[in-house]
Length: 105
Ligand SMILES: [Zn+2]
Image (cartoon, rainbow, N blue to C red):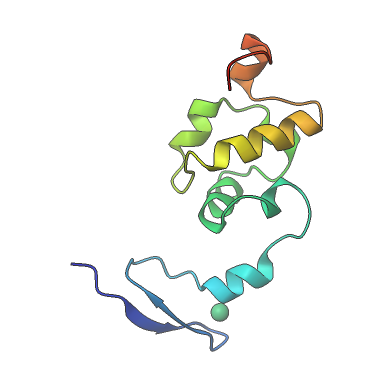
């Protein structure tokens, strides 16, 4: 059973969480970048990317989609967002680069 419990973060925000993840969603929202691909993915995905040191599209393009999916917090929904962000800057995932951009996805 995962009972949601009330947490209060360092800044006094109150929130309910059922996991052990101590991250406060309000703080997370305040830290949220307003531009770039990190602003377009979900908070867990953003944390995963930042934790991996992926904070620019250039760094992101050194990874394959498989590698990105393996990161804790990255869901399948994040991939199209990242792929689009890369494509807009003329980048692509490692495997996408090799395969070419005319795949079915
Ligand atoms: Zn907070």
